Figure 1 (cartoon, rainbow, N blue to C red):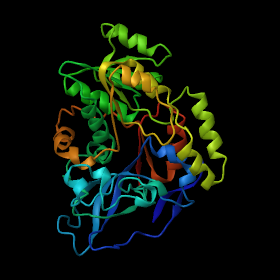
Figure 2: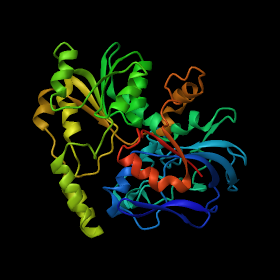
Figure 3: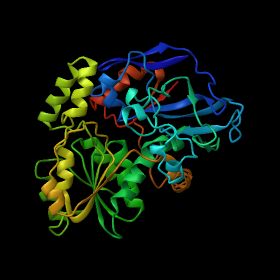
Figure 4: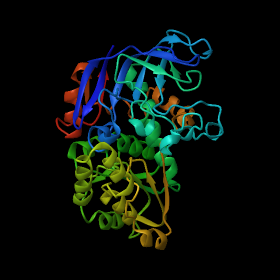
Length: 391
């Protein structure tokens, strides 16, 4: 089959790789009909290269048609249309029973001390082949795949694989009081859906984003927007009676712009041999933290900062005095996709499209065009906000 493979820093290519096969009785093989490039795929493209191997198949936002099922799979049939959550969970362990599927005890990457395995996401999360390909092997197929109907287009369902539940969880974790204000830093795909979810739930939402096209997209959904600047905390306090937002959501993560020290650390780590680079990432503060620090500044005293953007460093400096003095609550973590599907499936199927799932994709290209699409997405060229690949 054809699949998008990692070849090196800022280098991906479509190659012929072996077709996936049933390895366990609980597996299924999915013929991919749509798969998307996620913002966190760019971390592999740039920062987390030391954890990648040449030829790794990328991608963790996928959906398609069931092609084959293992002998123990009873919940799926050939021909079913399914969305594949990005985290791989068994559905039976303690963590899954607590709706913490991203911490699944069966698939935890214990050798790295990390949570559940993830499709297409480096040795950090198990080196599982991803879905930017023609076919995908799905473990624990009786539990993970989300069955959907055949009538609506893929774009109505595809984002249930990651970014819609990630955004929804981020808003839930933000703990916005009734009628309160939610500030969303970063209006990429997750930030867009977080802002729209906040509006759907009745909050005042202010989106902070330096790219004008992304602000314009959010404004179409009733979101107030601000450009990002060094005075953003003061601007938000002026808009909120001098207090700051009740809750703030960081939808940016480790590759925030405007962090020269973090950028230098990332570049320096990337020049080291992989084992040394891994140690540098794990032991040195390599994340660009200016946005997270701005979130901490912008939230009101006693408020909550919810982190949906991915961070990868293990020794990042944090303003502990401010966090303690302002009594700020931090909530974060990989999304527990299955936890939120009962809430979200009716919304993406609603004819009124309350979350605007049909107003996010800016680029739909073939799998063969994926290498160029990665570059365009990373550089924010051509008004690119979301890329969907069609194998």
